[in-house]
Image (cartoon, rainbow, N blue to C red; front, side, top):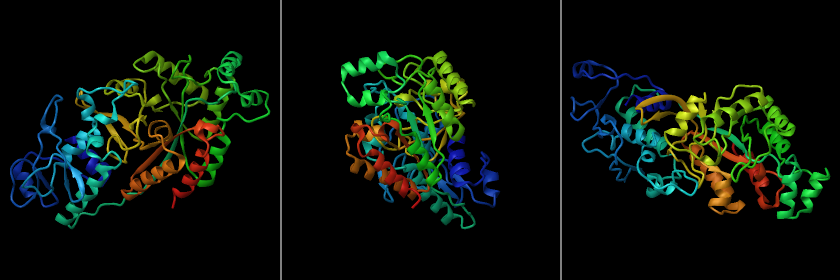
Length: 415
């Protein structure tokens, strides 16, 4: 209950609150008050509670959805001044309660989006919690005309995952020879001979874009010390990678992109964090999981132990949308330990790789989807976070049109 109210009142509506279990104190209080109990007290604003926030342990919940005032809701309640238990419903979605329940993982061992209530009920593409809070704020202002709620503003945050810094350059003779034998390419030879720019090298283009539109992006670097099927970046010990990290650290926020190998392996995670800190010359407190490989609560517990304070992994690596049904940052609640943590989660709703590989969209469809999510976040004055990869924004023929797509999109964000 504390967690739900901190998010709803302190963070979102920005109004102070306190609890009381005394009916006498409640009756005598002259200001705005909400009766969250099973019994009405006079004519006060009344919400009949669902049992979720009064339980311990994790069990299957009845999340039957209905449509009220044009929005999907669950944990509906009768004889109340608000049509569902917003406190319990917000807690259920933000805590990712459903991800603790038995489920089948996807091919990468991740929580599959098809398991989620948002996907099954058709609201994965909506920041439903923000919509609910707008309805709730209107209801409260109607009930308590003296309440003044400050307005919020839309925020766009571009972020980038540097999984493979260069396509051909700085990979060493053996990797390049193997790559050439597997897929002979004149382009590879020209790049290695210095006659052509590496197709994944789009860093100057991104710098110009950020400078022109005054954006402050976050770059997440994969610094795996050994290559694998899913960890394909150049060595973090190479001079080129070291310099690339150093250049970006001087201008932008840096985040760790924990390798596939680091998943569930705390010593490897610590080692990669130290490498990035040394290369960038600054302490690293933010991260995003490579391949969005995330398992609750273990992944977040490990990140906290490693000193991470902000994580940007809350989204799916298989489909675009709002995994936690919100376009705002929020603190992670450790459901196993029944504890509010200090780890703040920053949800993303669009990733280029989802559009290209998973949803198999062309650039026109992807741009439409990108604009849709931008508009959805603008409508609720929310936080809009995108993920792009440098290989999409370079000159690789496989991603033809993506650089132009991104340029067009960035020019429209402030509109």
